Length: 508
Image (cartoon, rainbow, N blue to C red; front, side):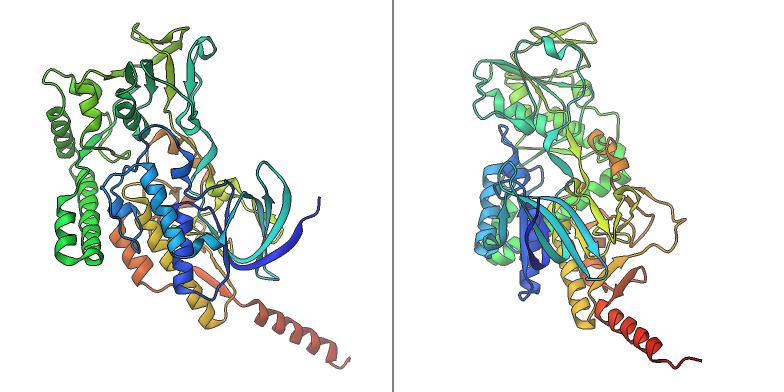
């Protein structure tokens, strides 16, 4: 099958979620003359916030930092997917980004040519498969996130086929699911599970969170009175900026305290949990993890809604392991049985580097797992490719904004000096490397072998420190001894001159 004619662009952004929209904003702000398009495999904007449809889905970061720096967040601190999605759509519409969106464009592969200094990107256009088209781009920007959109992770459960009710993964939530008066068991203890419990408790007959081991859960006020005061006193723009700085400092303080004083952090979190549960509740059974705070991401619960659902008796937590599914529920290793009409497997994600897109550089396939990340935004020896992966210990978008700013500064540097090729190169092949994500969560550990590596220091370190990244990505020079630049026109002319001189040289 032949491709439709190539469309030529300066930058091709892959993914129309929060990262892709952010990348488009900064690109057109700093480089209004450059052409770009955003390819989205699905039929809607919003990425995660449009894909997941389970009850109560919300951000587990405050929206003053999870929202864009360029667009103030005007609602409650922890918001549901509907409000986040409306915010993203508004951001795209306000800035003319809608005109650059191409829905139902699934990227099949990307091939780089150093001769032309261009990526050729193969794309399937159309819902459910259709026409093959090609794009040519000077740069490709991966805004794909890091998990698979087509499937979540569900472990093998013995006896699964015997269960007489419904089994649902939150990533594939049925629109017509009626759980009114039903007995529901949610397997898992992460952000999805602690969101589902209070959201479904009012309607379900009873809902139980079945966890193998506890997770750190931190209650957070859904209203930010300090933000209201700052906006009132300083005006919306300056008040939003001040709130954002305050919340960044608060996130940094909590993370650093957990890292430096884990035992003290444990005690504080336990005290907060116990204060919101009945006096005789076994806090240490269900809310005392074996790991230190922030070895895995903290789960935030707005206004303690999870604890209120438990205290009301409409929801419960069981800490045990699945022995087998039965016809009527789940038999536990302790010998107990949980009756269920519906079982929800909130058991995590499957990670996928750069949307699973195969990359080829000058005819050679790129082994993503053998590359090393440069400044958390480029890959060794992969020219003119940048990507955005946000923070795991803070709001995702804080990192994305800085990466996009740095990317735009890099383009400016290349324009000024006439370069059309840029790639990081690691001279020291003996440099120690480690996994890209320093995170012990199961969904991360299962997939680390498929992801790039990171080094033991800048610029090969994938930083999770906002203030360090402000210095590196916003303030420091884009020039680095590990970054290679080239000009194909000059190179081609030099080769042509050399060839002419050789042909013109007298014999003998």
